[in-house]
Image (cartoon, rainbow, N blue to C red; front, side, top):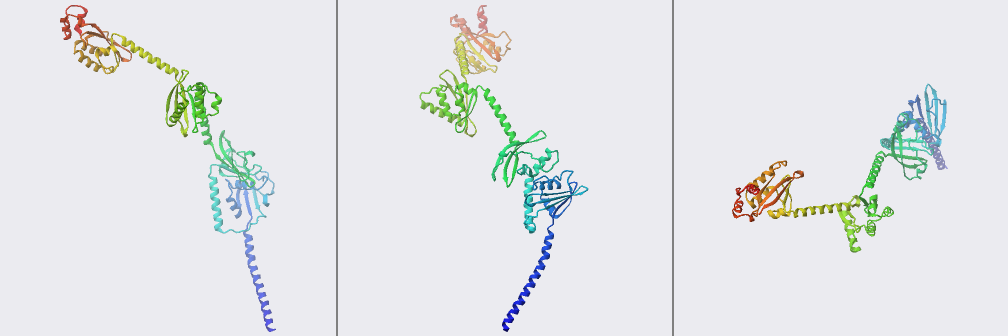
Length: 528
């Protein structure tokens, strides 16, 4: 019995001690909990004429993470993204007390205190984590990451914004705000205007990304172009507009350049055909149709190079080959030569035309072929060559020896008679010819007179004389000026010394100037 009593007494005593300990612990926690509840301050802003004059600590912390230039713009922009209707706080005539409710129980209480003072109280009674305390390291890490993200998006040149299902802009980066200020003459009001209208057809499905059409923003009569990228996040649309002015200018320049080339190619008399790396026709001009006679529909169908050449062969617009195999090998050689470097061929067609075909390699393995009708050029060349040949035949048929010297003394033309008399090559200089004449007939007064005549002005009429020929006869010479400073020298046989008496022949052979008589032959012999 005594043992049972002691056990019961000990149990009762333990229960009393445990109850007292629980009571003390409860009393100790209640002041700490009360202090924690007192530390959770409300979010209150006090403005005077849209200038912040006071705010609670949570309000200042919230204000530090809001984008915008001024405190008023930050708060108005933040409220516009959380309230479905306009607050009307920007208006001069506002009610003395205004209470608005947003999604998830968010409440705004706006109180006009007079003298331009406006107090804004924000409350979120349904927030489950309103009293959670975050350690300082985690909070500092979150603030640092938030600062990095905000700085990155604000320094980006692209326009970034969010808009709800009604098209209201709920958030925008600094580039967007700056553009709004430029468009609205430096005044920014919430809700922000939409700089770029996003058509409903371009809004993609949930979680997908789509590049919208290129759009333009007008500013001071100068348009800025942007490439818009859109995707959905929850019930809002996020849009990012990348500057595209440089791309638009480049595309415009390229388009104008292509138009210029197209007009130039259309006016060219030379047929042009450009084949890509797969040897399909990509570009041709009207002259190609005129020169080849191929149908426009066939060319616009982008045939291959060999289909193009086969059609030319059927139209008899290529040189007639002996057989198809040799022709195909010839076309393969043409394609290979054109792809490796510039290649030029002359096609003599069965119809009498003559085409010059030029193949040039282009970047990325493309080939360009140029077809030029040179029939008239070939005819003119042939006629010119025939005229030259006729002129040479006429000179060779003359009994006189003809030689033409350039202004620098170069022998540029001579006939067959000149070569036969002096036995000299048809090329050389004037000094070479004088040396040959001296070696053939000796140094004589007539040869000296000829040298002096070359040095006289072209207007001097006395530019003729005679010399002893290499075979013993007398040769009269005369000089005549031609265009371009050229000089024509003509030798003509005058006296055949073989038919003269022996004394006269002997004196002429010795270069004597003493011939009897007063006849013209006597004066000529004296010069010789």
